[in-house]
Length: 423
Image 1 (cartoon, rainbow, N blue to C red):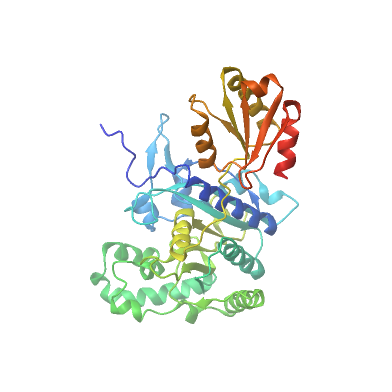
Image 2: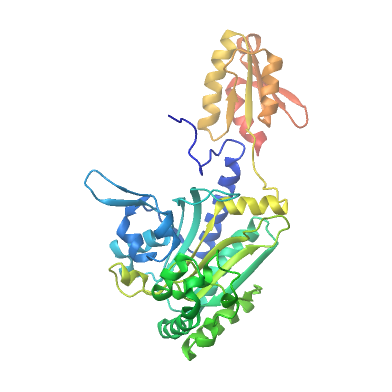
């Protein structure tokens, strides 16, 4: 019996978890500025939700989902991505009826996929994503892309590449689908089993195949851009115009297809151009998914969103040498010498904490020198020094650890003096 951590998961320890907290704070602040509200959905959902929404031709559904039966013999799945659950909640909770539209939501939480673990990729991973539901305006496509770029840039990333494409509307995709079938069918036996099964179900997904990407037919495959109808072309041109107006640089890549079946119109990926980042450069992916809400029982509702991996983001920060401005210190450490002083220090630390001051003391009965070393390790801004003699005189010494200056104050004034010095 193994008691070690499961393969494809990780422990995020103190010293590292502060980076995650900082990233989450930045992401939440960007969402606040763009007027997106947080939503939290269950970690597991009914399996049918992902079969209907993600699509049965995707690698996620075919190979990667963690699916199990509960005691009621119901098939449940640990969520492999966030969009389906958010749209399910949008439909089930009737958010489409709220007066404030479009509905703009974001989420941060763990997702689960059974895939080969590699650098920056885990079987349990954390996604940050947004969904904007209820608008067909190409301006909101540009807004969603701009939000993703703002998160990365706010964290200090500079070597980013934005790639966009249009997957067209239903009519455009139908015409492209027929062209792809005609293109691949004569030589489909030369492709992998996944591609063979996708030929009739969703031939666009053949273009996303990792095994056969060097096949000569891949290079000559008809582009979706050649099959966009007038409406789809105009839509895509408007998205590009808004991005240009925002000052956001981008490349159009006709070969970009999203891995989930519900995408149409705008699709995009943000990649890292940092040297040494790795072979898989994608940081973020998203796109428009009109019709997904209807597919799971709601009204026909246009939507667009993206998801990014926090693990991949951390790898990009490392690749660019970005140091996050983390606050990894405490406000005050109380050094005590003597039994009575040590008992009083417990009370003082508690008073500091309830007054909004981060504080710590020694719990191992260490000597004064060792207590000061502990204060140094915690990067304490101030140290209160209390001995039995000071306690008898109702005073305590406060030392500024940066300047080395020390002053004696009344114990009754200690909390207020500390708060004043921290200002």
